[in-house]
Length: 222
Image 1 (tube, rainbow, N blue to C red):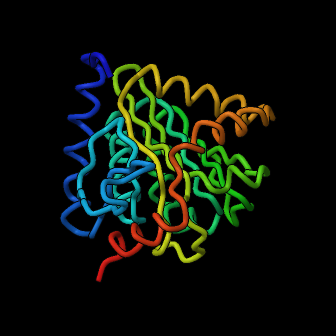
Image 2 (tube, rainbow, N blue to C red):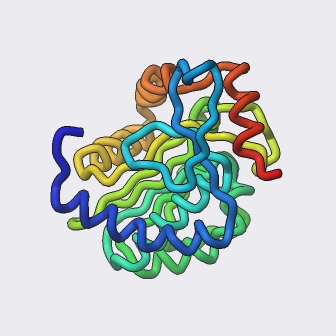
Image 3 (cartoon, rainbow, N blue to C red):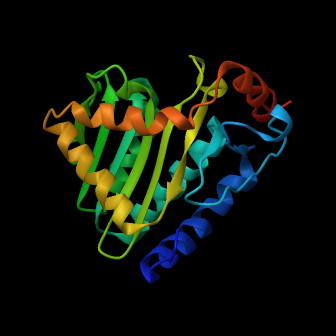
């Protein structure tokens, strides 16, 4: 990135202050992703990855970043939060938390496959019908002054959430956040070509099976 706006710096500072408690209480792990890692092996574990750089996240690192963005939305008190949960079962434990956020900001939109058993009127639920979109995990917040997005795709085939590995990045660039938010608006309108766009751009960022085996050993807590 050539330059960073003042809004971007402010958003990152606020995000990191809210991320810190989640790093202390869990075992979030990431490794920088390169299609051809040095020596053919992924060997570097990073607890707090650099923004705008593609990493492979274990489930705890991804949740820590997700919760930090959610806290950022709640504390900002205005704006829109978009979150994909793959399947509705992943959202149920977070429903009360999201209800509290929805009471504070302008809009909360939750994407998931399936129907919630209880539908709070303050949360907009968008069903995921496209099978490829189920693999994505996105948490995006945009307000007039604060912008943040975590954009990941599941890299392995694990069904157990604790074994899932995600390839992606997080960013505070207001232009990128706004661009992704608009694409989700198009998805809500039924423009499936957006998923094809996501898939084309993620193809170079997904590890092969040999790399995943190495990453899984690194990211899974002993």
